[in-house]
Length: 120
Image (cartoon, rainbow, N blue to C red):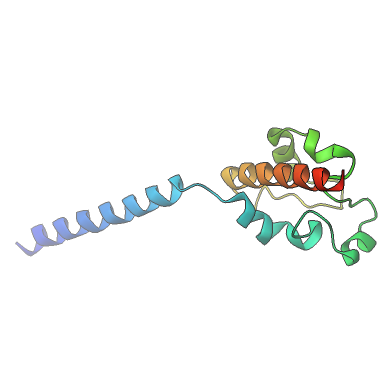
């Protein structure tokens, strides 16, 4: 009888855990949250890099500059996130999941479009 109760309890516990994990995996990822956590220190909260980062990385530009990011597709931005850019921007392939990269790529593109419009 104890074995049956244990089996039922274990089954219920595993069911609850699996439902929670499934719910976590289906929740939408916030590109803004990922950006603030992983990107803002170099690229700035609003897409304008802080002076110390501009001094450190001479090629670092405001996201809206020259329309570079605006003209990229989300897939292209994800590729940059996966591969990095030279020694100036590290790869995020081991740090961010595919959904996180896609979300932050879309957010970065939106932010670049906003910065470009404000600068125009």
